[in-house]
Length: 463
Image 1 (cartoon, rainbow, N blue to C red):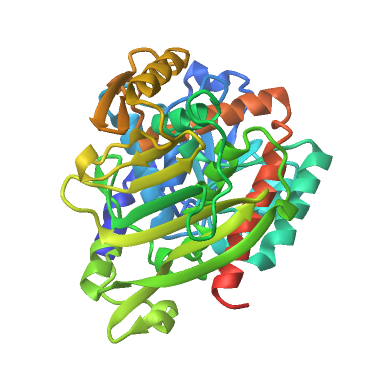
Image 2 (cartoon, one colour):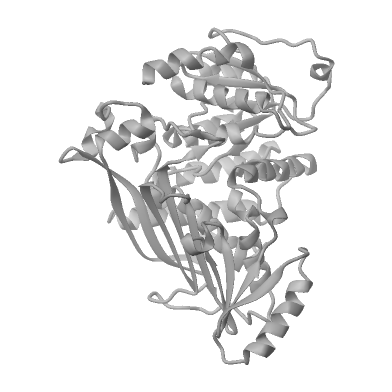
């Protein structure tokens, strides 16, 4: 299956402007002559998120995108996804991929610097090096999460942010979950004292904030079954679950509970952390990678014929004295009609704000408001409706679920898919590029976020 993929996807090279390790693609279209503000450089695109950045076009971004990658199936799949966006019947893109492959691909990129924004989404073991050297070369970096996967790389990341400031370039990670509508509504309502009161302090056993994410190895991306690289299942290359998906959840804790506040690692106190594996059979592994057997570098994690991937993790910590719990779990496949799911609760002195995304919600995130502090439901409902009318969303409806719980009905026009969030993040990053700076709270927030995730892994492993 792997050989077939290589054979079939090689035809992508012609349509995406690639072919040969030193190839340059040229187009005579007048649009190519425009002096664009931003020129993307995609480096070693081993994860499908790299392609999602290019699912739409951006007015200030050149359609010519330079790709530097090693030979292999990863970059071929990346080009195939770009080709699918270029050829789709509705709102097709017009990207022209200019590809260089070879063992010196990264050094070649640094020497040529054919653009000003490096997009990183791939093998996370190499991420810290790619970030550091790109920043040192005076390039802006838009990086998929996680930027680092171990506490040993934390100082390297801190230094990269310092260098970026000195060189006047931006280093930013792709936090898509900030753009999900129910999460935005949860944040907005939590800032309203009339309805929410204030965030409770919580305890280790009952944290003030809990965020749980469930993901699936087998899934559909851009309309096709996702074929993952085999290294994705190696925690030394992808990272353990407690430092991977949790990056989003820790970010949301900071973004919702302490909006636009400058945070520091000294604000974090790790209380507990644990990790556990998901077992993958050979058949399941083949189903999502195309490999008939586990590669040699995965044999260390094979027990009784199954691959044990430490993709699950949980941490309880205090941030500025507030107890928070973050948990991630990976399964092989979602139930019929399902997908990745998100659960979130914020406990206020007047109500609880809860996001659920289960079968009852038809796997769409839904925001519930529980009146837990004793005011009459009539009064509580009236106050909530008044507050909701003031939000920057029209047509929101409030319905009763039970005697003390309300639900906000969100119109379909505000439902944006996870894949579309990548365009929203990139658009925001382009705004920051034009301004020449990030908001002053973003860099301290990123540093604090990765201190939190890597500290959790260190504690969970007993180091």
